[in-house]
Length: 350
Ligand code: FA5
Image (cartoon, rainbow, N blue to C red; front, top):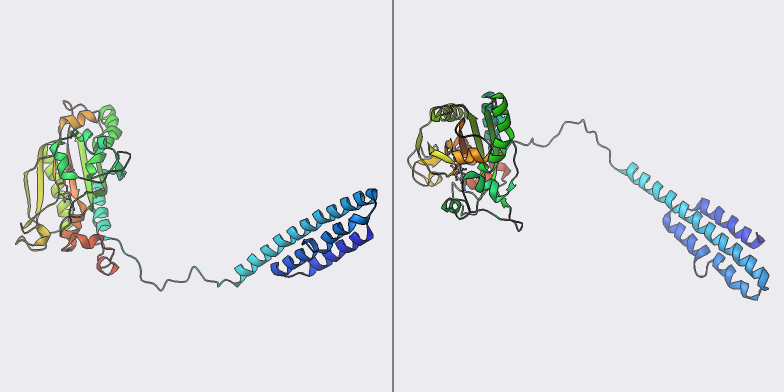
């Protein structure tokens, strides 16, 4: 290699070993490889050389250029790494085992009643199922004996997606899937279907003290041979007495839902006003809490279960309203308010 080039290479190596930061390194790059840099200038002085010598020298300069660029690149990586390590070193240290000084979080009142209901039904042999919030028209309506244009759909206007799916307006939307999931076990081994499925529901409707557009329900189904209304009433009574642990007034009256026959409305005497009438119960003294009934033969058939052999009940508990009644919350909208002051005062009484 030409002596001048050898000298430049040695000079670059020496300066690279001294450079301490990326700014200094960039100045170094400019001074060697920039337009007026010492290596670039070598190329400029070649025009007066003989053709053969110029070719040889040009090749050597280009080789040095590449080697210099490579050395600078390696130094850049080295300095960047050192910079990150220095930043990590400078970060404040903390001990994750130190006890927290912040206030602890708490469960939402709806979560509390949901968990309580789950425990009650689990002890009675029910499984707890999870289900999607986005469902098809078939799941939410058609499989439940509610064909297109049925007037019962007017009671449950919801939010539709562009692809035709919808946000479920009722947890009953999972009934068909549950019947299909556990039906084969019932038929083959005689294992009754006993399942609850809590979930968030959505309805496009005006809100007031006892109506929200987003609320929670907990569906329950039981299917076996010889299931009757007596079984349904037993489970409803057990659930309510466990949740409230005190005498509460309920009433059962006929109710129409296309997926049950017969169908009932189970109302609870308003615990906010003691049945006198207030905004929480729309001044009626009663709050619709848990409609229920015997599963319609068409629904069983659609779920792959022979209605001549098996019967079952279903209920749709209004979990949000149950939380209102249990904790004396006057306005349902407080439950979705996100106000920690309001919501953190409730505790599990298990
Ligand atoms: C239903 O949703 C039926 N799927 C229930 C059912 C299941 C009947 C199985 C028979 C067999 P309904 O629309 O009435 O029914 O709602 C059930 C309960 O959910 C109501 O009693 C109430 O407690 C609660 N609920 C309904 N709409 C709202 C709302 N907008 N805000 C808060 N809670 C509501």
